Image (tube, rainbow, N blue to C red; front, side):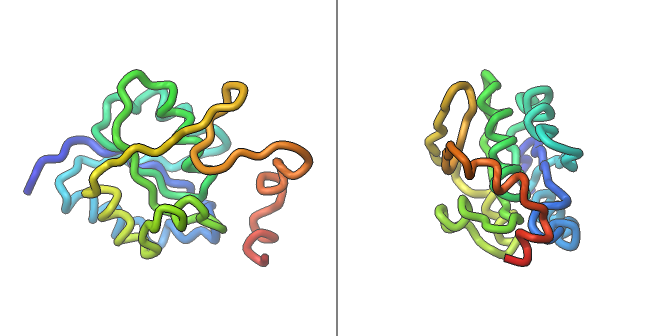
Length: 158
């Protein structure tokens, strides 16, 4: 087996409909089979992923996040604060998964984990507005907080 180094796996347990938990074992097993020493971090609240990546991110060879677009954005915020940025993979598990659809990432979590672990990293534009980073879309005005203020049950219903 190839030793690929250390992988930090950050996941949001409440993203989407809680779809990560039933797939957690298969995701981690995929990383291990591909030669990574895996550290798992569950997000505990807003900005937790950002703070964890800032504090520990440089000690990993690859970071993979699993959650919705918001989880990916938090990890991106943390990565942008680092001098040495590890490659970042994404397993979508949110309500809409716009970023994953745009980049044609696999829908099946185990397949997405394989791509995140073995895929060749490629550059992705990151934007910044007034010190806030974005990796997919930026919005302003009256509707910017709608996705955050709408409770998860309502989003799932829609």
